[in-house]
Amino acid sequence: MFLAIKLLQWGIIFGLIIFFILVTILNQKTKAPEGVDIPDECLGCTSKTCIIKTNDIASIKADLKELIDEDNEICEIKHLNEEVVNNEKN
Image (cartoon, rainbow, N blue to C red):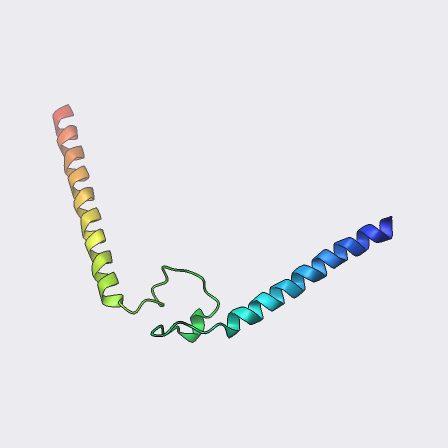
């Protein structure tokens, strides 16, 4: 009984290792779709929002700058509101 349980455990571990190796090899052999240029450092990355993988970096920078400017405006408004409240208390 003990031997059967150990063999089952080792069989599961060995099977998972073989499965991982097989999936990794098949993933490396999968070709990118036409028109997609993937850098070498991104071959193992699965992130969909990675800035390196996107070709339109200029528009992403513009979007990020716009978001930062909006956040700065919100922070300034909050700061002004706090000053008004503090002045009213005094």
